[in-house]
Image (cartoon, rainbow, N blue to C red; front, top):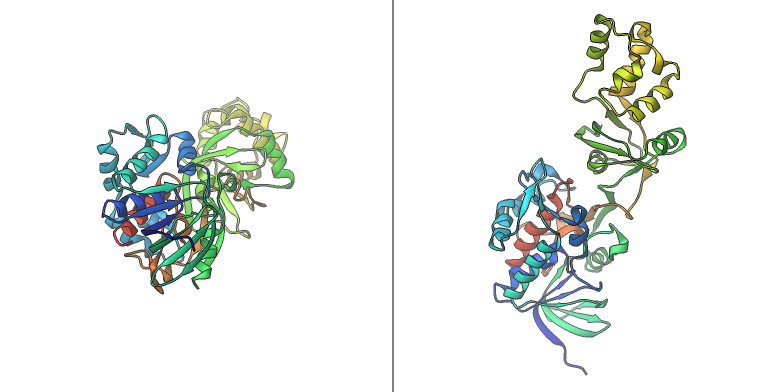
Length: 398
């Protein structure tokens, strides 16, 4: 029988959380092996933030995360904060900038973040092995045997850091959920999140005509609202505002969009009427909104509205305008799915995981970190901060 290669800890998944955990554990003196089925590490890191990696946010709070257990994330986020990660990147002289709202991006490339994680793993003597699909995991003698297509390994502590189902072309699978179920842990329903909406019928036609048009909006759903940019696409609606609200959207829900969140159309109409404006409505609104959008939106109400002067508007016209531009209500037909979703909502039920150690409550040697857990952050660096925090915390115990 071939002798098993022995490690104190094996981390399955060479993404943000897995590498963070591995480097932390390695620097504690643990012998650590990272296994990944992909051909290279950190793929999601490399493609994130348009290739510049929005690696954390200055304003991280537990309220920026969704989970069936809303308290679960608090401990890790308080023990390893955004400032702790900033101390790490400062040691490597990483140049970065605040893109607004506390969103921190690399000045150069996302690879800079990956290189920091790999350097931390090197400091801890961590071994990293790619192109290694896992065949079976079995529990034995207070540890685990991992059988792979290129060899078999034994460890005391096993960390599952395989992420969710988002962006399958990057190698995402349901592996982490299957392992959780193998060890009798439950999975909260998983769905695409931080994902564009699709539309159908007449509104899809409108969106296709407006494809590429972006504007600042306030979008709300399920008592949650975001004030960011919306982008029309050939499939429906995207942009930061839509991705954010998608975290809170379920299939029967409507969303409401205010296309003039910083301006009162009621006040504008009164001002234009008082000033005796003779300019057409489409041109007046064109000072506040993209003209392509104005024409498309007015045509949905009444094709004659665009060329009317304000003094020609009836009370009914004004009410329709206010409703259409401030309170557009739409029920998306769906989302673009995991193909373009940035994260997965749902995952391993955190009620069965220690918020201190990240070990399964039924098996103190089995750990889950990062996106595989039922913790989903907002757009803007929050999901990376969860990866750093959960990985670091688990790294103290594995």
